[in-house]
Length: 288
Image (tube, rainbow, N blue to C red; front, top):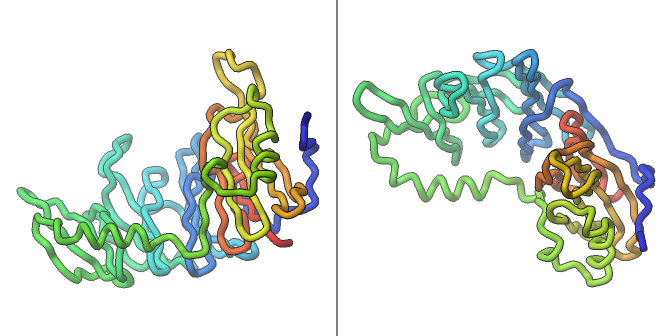
C-alpha cells in the first residue's frame, strides 16, 4: 500500500528562492542572517560569491572571484568576515592565499596572497607562510589582516584552539539531518516515513530532521532498474506534521541524480534550506 501520493503539489510553498545563475557549489550560514554562497559556471570557467538575506532571500551582494576567475573558492566564515582562498597551482588541491570580505556587503577588507589558511578563531585568522627553508605559523587580525602573532614552525600549541573553533563555528540554531533509525521518532511516524518509498526503489538512507512538531524527510528513489549500468535517482524532500502525520510539503529537489548524496538539506531557525537541482537556493518555512 502506498501511503503518500507524490503528486508534486504541496500545501506549503517555499518562503523564497534565489538562483545565482550557476551551480551552487558551497554554502555558509552565519549569525548575521546572511547566507553566503559560491556559484560556478563550468563551461565558462567562472566563479562568483554572493550573500543573500536569510529571511527574505534578497541578494545583498555579489562578488566576482578573487584573484582568479575560476581558481578561487570559499574557505570559511568567521564573525562576519567571509574568507576566500586561491590555489597554489591550477588543477592542484593545495590552497594558497586568503581574501577577506565583509559578510554584510561583500566589501573586500584585506588580502594575504602568500598565506595558506588553517583555521579562524577568536577574531583571528591562523595560517602558514612558506619561507625559503622553513614554514612560519602566523595569526592575522580578522578585520585588518595585520600580523598579530608569529609561532615559528611548531603549531602544536594551536591544535586545541583549532578543535574548539571547529565546534563553535556552526550557529546554534542550525540542525543537520540524521538517519531515520537514529532520530528517535515515535514509532507511528517512523513507520510511515519508512514506507514512503518501496525498498526495491530506495537508494541510500532516509534522513530526517525533527524540529518541534515538524519532521523533514529526504530520500532517494530509483527511477530505473537496480541493474542499470548508470543509475538514475530522484531526491525527494517531504515535510509532515508529527502529530497528524499529514504531508505539508513534497517536492523533487534533485532530478536525475547519479548517486544518493546525503545531507541535501538542513534547518536554520524556522526554515528548511536546500538547493534544488543544484542551482536554486530554496527556503521553506517550518510553520508557515
